[in-house]
Structure formats: structure tokens, C-alpha cells
Length: 329
Image 1 (cartoon, rainbow, N blue to C red):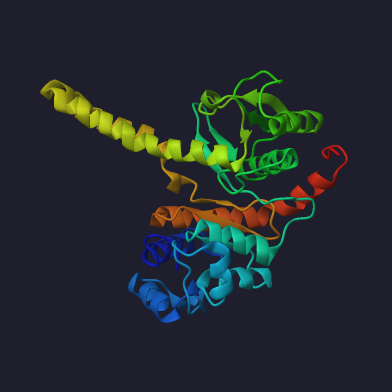
Image 2 (image 1 turned 60 degrees about the horizontal axis):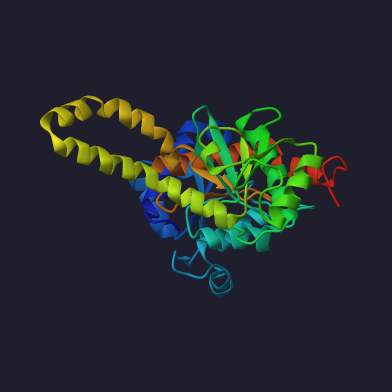
């Protein structure tokens, strides 16, 4: 029931996911049952293909995360997360209040052994492939240990889900030199360098789009600024193209002829391609999507949840953070 277009987009996306992956997906829809069931039927969904769990309350985007969880224990978010924690579901997916999903995942599911702070990341398209940036805004004030753990969890996620063996890990900094940065960043550099990760040192902001590393680590304050700046790029480019087209008829024709190619090129910036990212470091699979996710984005969130649930991600994270070869005092 969360998200900017709930529950319509959620139903459309869930229906698409069932149709695409029905042989490996048992879907449970949590929310106002009468409303959800009616929409599912109106969209042509088979009620025997899903299960419905009623939740009488909704956590909105305006609700404060922790307070909302306490005051709205019967919200779709809280009920669904408890359903997952109790073992009735293998994963939980939501495009609702990000802070509330994160708080629920941490408080209800608990942390993986060895994890100080759970984190969420974001995929950023690069010149070749893509880059996983984390933290994307969860932890705005971090210690070196947290940054080290983000590197470990991001590396494992990239290897297990993206499928690249020994992904490279870098630390976002104001320069490539190893002695630059704050005390926290300098200490994190030492820890990452001493680990068994494929650590390639520091990278600057301009290196993210050049894919100088598969996983780029930073605190959530910096990461969220990078993320929000990146989200503004498509609309900026479209505005500049409109301005160019208004200058002359020739420019308008040229841009019109190239519109299809430009749309395809800029398609990699669409957050709906990935759907959502998991909360890394919690005892379960909680996928957070963009509040404005389209039905395609919702579908991809559900399919990503299937992948993560089948990957044994948390088992690998716990083993890596307990292993002497990757732990630093």
C-alpha cells in the first residue's frame, strides 16, 4: 500500500511478475484486502495465483519511520515484514516510505552477525557496465568500520547477484592519493587495503561513471548527494535539448531524427530497470524501491527479491565478516 501510485502500480507490477516467473514465485499481497483483491481481479489476475494478507493501516511518505512502526503495527509494511520474519515468506518488497522500510527491516528482522549497520546502495550506469554505490543515504554519519563493512557487503552482492567474480571495490574520496580524506576515510582505506577484497584504492566523483570500480563506498551523506544529483541528469539533458531545438528549425529536425537513439541511450538512467535494492546486513530479504516506481519497476523489484532470496546472500555476508582474512581489529 506504500508508494506514490499505490496500490495500482503495485498490482500491475505484481501481476507482471507472476506472469513472468510463476514457476518460481509464490506471491503474497499485503494490504487492504478488499481493495487489493478487487484491483487484482479488475486487472485480470487469477486470485488462485496469489495469497492475500489483510493489513488495516498504511504508513504514508509523511510518517516518521520509527514512530509510524510503533503507532501503526497493523500497517501493510509492518504486517508484511513480520510475515517475512516469522518464516511465512522468503522476501519482502515495498516501494513505500524508505525510512520506515529500513527501520522495520532492522528492528523486526535484526542484523546479520558481524554487521554493525545495515546499508542500502544504488546502481549507477557507467560507460561500461554499472557501479554499485553505497551507502545511498541510510547512514549519514559513519565510522571506518561501517565503511569497511559496506565494502564487504557490496562486493558480495555484486558477485552473487550481478555475477562478476572478484568485483573491484573503491573508496570515494577527494583525490586518488591514499593519504587524502578525513580521518574516517583514511582509517577505512587501511582496513579495506588489509582485507581480502579486490580493493583498488580511492576514486573521485568523476570516476564513478567511468566504472573505475564495481563497488564504490562512501557514507550516506555523500552517497545521497551523488544519487540525487544523478537523478537530476535526465531532466537536465531533456531541458537542454528542448532549448537547442527552439533555436532553429534545423536543430529541431536534427534532434527529432535523433530522438529514438537518445531515448535508448538515456534508458540506462531509468531506476525502474533495477527495480530496487536490498537492505544489506539484515536477517532477511527486504527490497526497497523508488516511491514513484512504475509497474515495470515493481515487477523488477519482485524478480530481484527472488534472486536475492535464492542467492544465500546473508550467509555469505556473515561468513565474510567473521573470517580472519577479512576482519580487521
